[in-house]
Length: 455
Image 1 (cartoon, rainbow, N blue to C red):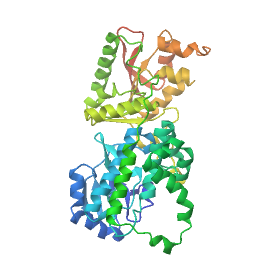
Image 2: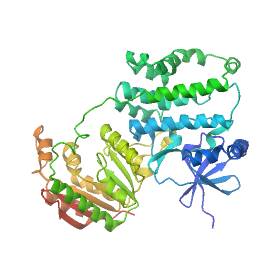
Image 3: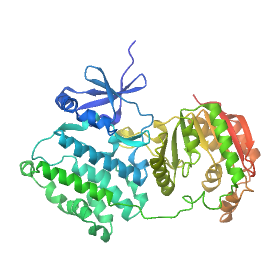
Image 4: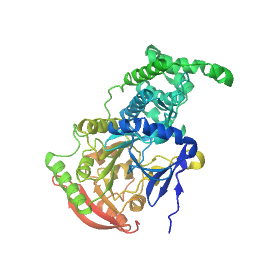
């Protein structure tokens, strides 16, 4: 019996082909209209070079006009990335365009959604984005690159890193004219930004008013195209985040309520529980710099190491980039308001929960923030965790803990049920408590639980 193909909604825009799922695997159909370009990609040896340099996802031809790319365990989106993740994705895209021009091809798409993080590094995943280079024709993907990479990176660097969340409502893009309005005056002294953001925004109306015939007369030589790419690369490389100290990006350096004994005990317990479960996919919720994510990663589990503090996600990514860690993916995810479904009919880009189903969730030093700072009842938290993972490793932090006292210092204690007894009672409705151990040298308790309802 043949399995039904399920087309992936986000590929509806591409006339060159489409993505579909079959038997849990991702495949790509190559339409007849794209065949000539696909043949050139292969025959020119551009594909071989990009794969060799680990810039493009490799694939196998498994049928007539059907390829199966190397599978990626989790698909992330640009508004979930740190500044440096988006920056590296931008530089990857420009690098691929430069190499493609040497092989007589060019990228017809420069969307950030064409990049994923795989084995710790950014990689281009859209095999059908390459087309034969047309002499004299400007880079068709130029504006898209500016809207999806240069504009958000500029705003994050010059204004506020949180502006990246505009990419959610813009489905990956920030309009050039909006970026020009939001950027401060000093950004105009960055010549590449003056050219690619401010000047482009100023000429937008004029370009939009050009007739099709007039537009075709705007030529660009191959050398000019390469110079454009070099200039964009300089623009991206010039952007840096200002150094910023937050409560959480110095958490492990400052007094954080853990003695060395307690910290070591907690790591040993987490490793013991994870070793028992043998997970393949882990969520480390509130991961900070990924200290505990490394434990699951070392056990060969892909770990989505996420936090709602941009600074710690940035530090986490820079750390794994330096150490070449393959099994950790740092992401900006706020568990209280995670990435929603967006785009056409709310199906173009899936919500965070639709894209991931972990074997275990690590909720370490998190429960008090959710229950007290966010006013979420323990019953709701227990139900939530039970719906999203078979196993849960959770740390209960009592009111006697200095971190909880800090949360309650500026507000009235309206949480009479926040105690270990109520915690166990509510979570026992949804979980079987498999293990329960006190973190040595602290009042904190670490639990291993198994969901009663997760399928």
